[in-house]
Image (cartoon, rainbow, N blue to C red; front, side, top):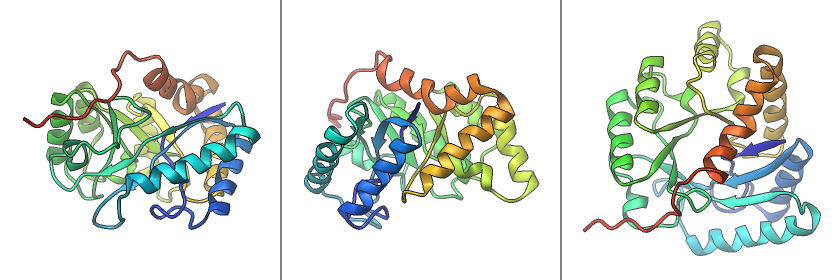
Length: 244
């Protein structure tokens, strides 16, 4: 059983599916490959995509209605993936409904060439606001060392890695990813799915890690850590940020 906390399933919102059939195919495939809890996280990136809470709510309701009868044991939550252009997360400051599953948790992505100082300062800013930064696809930020990642974890950030990491070419890159996993610097493996076929990669990555690191560790990365964060933690429900 898997808990996927980062995916782009809602149609017509970002670079995920274009239509309802694409969305329904994605959720069917996710379920087929063992996902039983999922947070949908459309991009909140005003430079690339229009942001409409009303449209997102409408499409999310369509997904819930479709899944309720077909997959009654599948729990679906709402979230967003916030793009950090500056050290202050504007979507949070503007009281937009971008938190993850109603918790004080924000999924944040950066430009691939972002440096440690930028990410470090943003993590501190979010933590000072009572928000837990959930860092998206840590493998994309080539300027971060294992030591850097350890430092932001100590500040309270949660670190995620996309399941596609194991398909990456290049021995040096793979060794880096494996070191991060071995040192327990990765908390959660996500699909970051944009298409139905991405869930086959998610499933294959789980089996790959079972063979490489054992089933217990794979289960922690693909389910238990996310469950602990979103369903057993004592984090308060997200409240609007008061900038005054």
